[in-house]
Amino acid sequence: MFVLVWNAATLGYVRTPEQVEDTVNPAEHRWSMFAPEPRGTDGWYVVPGRLESGREVDAFHRGAVCWDPPSDEVLGFPSHRWLVYLLDLQRRGYETLRPAFAKYVCQRWNETHDDDLTNVSVYYVQQPTRLEGPEPTERVEITNRSCSTRNRGTT
Image 1 (spheres, rainbow, N blue to C red):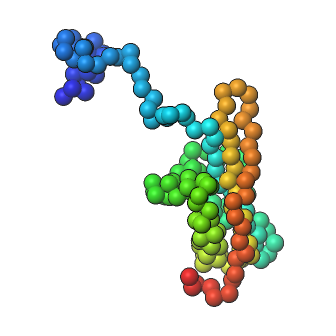
Image 2 (cartoon, rainbow, N blue to C red; image 1 turned 180 degrees about the vertical axis):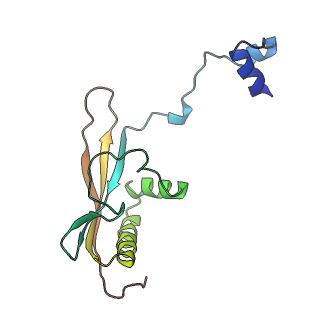
Image 3 (tube, rainbow, N blue to C red; image 1 turned 120 degrees about the vertical axis):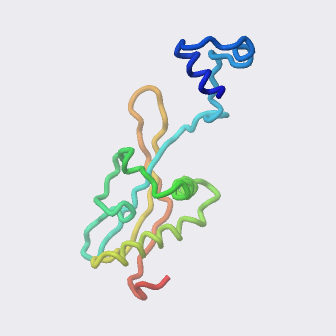
């Protein structure tokens, strides 16, 4: 009810009671979502893999290798858990997750394609958040793996 009255008051449809005006300061803005300070970098993953045929593909995104920033649609994650997992993957202290991710990428590709992956490298492309000028990127290889095609279909 409070939100409804507050929105109506903001639009000028009703006058708020004195008590509401005293408890809520409309000029107050909080940025606690970004506290204690906003993130200084953003980034995305590029997972180039070499196929038996010699071609190179982005094995995670199942397309051509592209180092440019992806569109918002491409950044869509299957779930919130995937988002958290991928954010952790590139952080210090989570190095043990990296080989398993590369193994997953190899297995997923090789189970669904005839031209098997022979190896993959996982890169996190970092882009500092800057207010002025172009934002340079830095490619950070976080792991690489040889993809064994023996024992296909087993984990």
